[in-house]
Image (cartoon, rainbow, N blue to C red; front, side, top):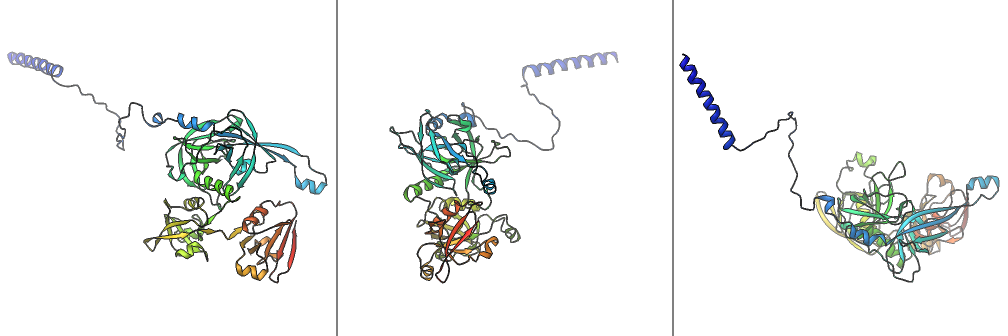
Length: 463
């Protein structure tokens, strides 16, 4: 028995020595890390990186910045405030005048000194001063402005050609693309910030036809009117607004797409005012109660709720119930994408509209026409241009016909009369009317000359 125990011990030692030698000389090393079990399995999605690294490290902003900073200017708006007009009315003394200075940015778009900026940067200006990145200053004149798109065009007289930016194609901008915002925040010289395109065709004010490029490039007060450029240095937007509870940047900024800004600038230079090409349809607001009740808030496209008589849409055969899926080269999933594309077109342009009609897609060529109706600022009266029949009936080829009146003005008997003058200035069409009514003060006195259906002129004074 003792001999058996000795043999077993020898065999055990020999086996241990043999196993140890095998592990040391022949088996490859394997390391296993044991962690707490997880309910959800995770799979690595990393890919091999290039020698330069990935993402932002591979993007070169220097070329775009160098092309842009010298084409962005500082715009100073000098106005005089008259204080409170109500106090002046009650107490009969002229309010104390106080000088006020507003600041923003602008982008040089031609070597001879044309500059695009925001309308709100130059609004009510009594004098405008533009300072270049080299600190040279010039007096600027307003060539024209369009409050609806918030774009204005300035001109400075220069002796030497200026560095400038050419408009790029904002339709080609892609979500996730790197962009630079260049402007003059906090009264500094040209300042560059970087971000990405967060969204396109973004609307930020309910009831307004807006279509902004949204970015997360830092934009602060003073950036308004500055440049949004891609990494090639192409101008793809004019920085316009931020959304913030503090008034400073919190991650959301918005720019007017360059295609809209360029069209506005071209119109101001050629016609003196913006030419709007109208499709001729009415739609349901996506988040309206009616849209939700009818299940139209979840459709991928724009629902045609009605077609305007004698419009391009009517002539092309668009019908109520059609869902617009595409216009031109732009796919449409929401109303702001449709209006954004149309904002870059003029009356007389033909566009191809792809609609879904009862599950079948069809393409309809639509000739855009001039807008014939308008809701006027301040008073909210709806007017339209005079038809040939109206011109014969009222005995005038100038003026606008009142087609709808807010409840507040129902007792004034304004409906179906023609407005021919506002505060002594003649009205020729809805564009004139919109411009004149925009200048009306809610606290002042307004005189309106009308022609009734009998051809008699009458004057109404609103206070």
